[in-house]
Length: 462
View 1 (tube, helix red, strand yellow):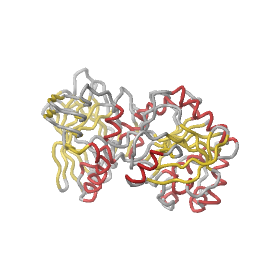
View 2 (cartoon, rainbow, N blue to C red):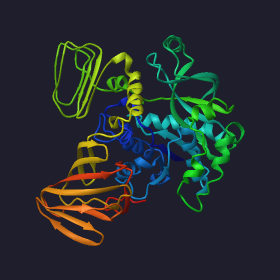
View 3 (cartoon, rainbow, N blue to C red):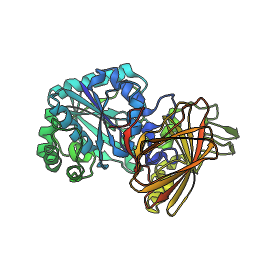
View 4 (cartoon, helix red, strand yellow):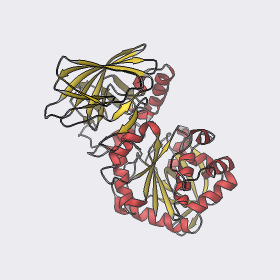
């Protein structure tokens, strides 16, 4: 088998912990490893490590590569220039595998699921593999444990060996319909994990998703692995469920035989964590009194709760979320409002961790942005340039080794240097003490995507 890890997405329903530039699949929500890392390990248990590829958005490439580098320096990562949902992502990844001469059974899985029982997960995938070899596109169904309105539902039809034929799909029903589905034995949550042969998917797309099929055939990964923006932009933005599952006839379902959570909302995070005798989940610096069935999550500051019932509160340095535990699906609307008003709180955290250390945004306004950058001992930023901004660095503590247009400067505390627009530069800390600098950016576009990397000791150059 081969595996496709879908590592894009914004995780908007887990705001404020999940942000556009650091979404939930990169977070370590209830483990020492991120959801992406746990997904990779899960696939490693059922297939060779060299058979796994990841597909992600260009703005997440560096973080995805950094996390997966722990397992292999040669993990293949396809980079989408823009987000186009799961149907184009799966289609183009499948075409990549075909162009590499691989027409085996493929497991396409999201990178944000929580599954602990890998042994029974493997049994589930084995059943799906058998059906895929018979010409089915297989989806994995999870028996509902509550009437969730944030899931797609599968109506299981005729029983077949290893699974069921699918009668129909229903995406995110209202509560009345979800209650009806819960009381029936024929409905399952759609886990978003798909198993199929590459050739089967191509033939199915040719019949029921012609636009996606035709655009996919324009790529030739025998020549290059880069995904051309102009060609990719012609894809419709559509999910695999809508494009394929709702239109094809060769769809089957296998029942998930292990634990599963997509951690798609804060109530799902609450359900997946251990609770005290009053049903509370407490993560971080928490003091609680007389609370019931409540989740308190602190990333930094002390969070105190008194007399709270059925509430979720999440603290981050720049935003606090408070909501009823039964209304967590509405967090996505808050995220969208922030996006519409161009509030950067939806995009990025004030403190962002990198392999070389971290930076904290101190202030920003029209045409300027100020950061405090902390470089760990022996840490080094990539050799890079910026098309839209200049930078001014002031050393606060430590000694900075600055490379600017092939010249090297050693700057002590109190020293400063200007980095012009498009100048090739790097910052390093060659000593055993932390290096801290103030960076003042000036320009029309002050975005993290405005980084062109030439060399990087952490392997983030494509």
